[in-house]
Length: 136
Ligand SMILES: [Zn+2]
Image 1 (spheres, protein in one colour):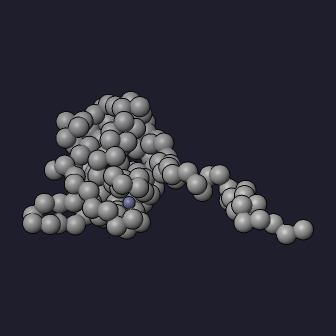
Image 2 (cartoon, protein in one colour):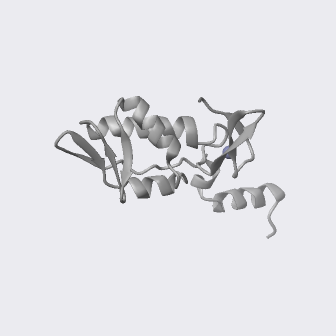
């Protein structure tokens, strides 16, 4: 027997995994930190900056310094923060940085870089081409 056009379409859609039809969500790993004396260290900082594609983490350091009101600077593969902060607090800061400065506002992918337009910095997405405004 031959299939009707509708039956063929049904078969075709049945073969597409459900997941690929949904919007792909970017999974950011958990920030791992520990405190030592009056300081807090982020163990997987290098890995996190690579995933965010911010190998030059100038903006992230500025953001963290402002949010925590204490110095934040890389030390080898780790990040040193000049205060005592819980892992949850640091995770919250990274999540906010990600949402405001890294993820594309249109498609939610992290494949972005900064572009400057008339002196205003914007986020350009390499995945979908969208340009979104960013704060600061
Ligand atoms: Zn995009």
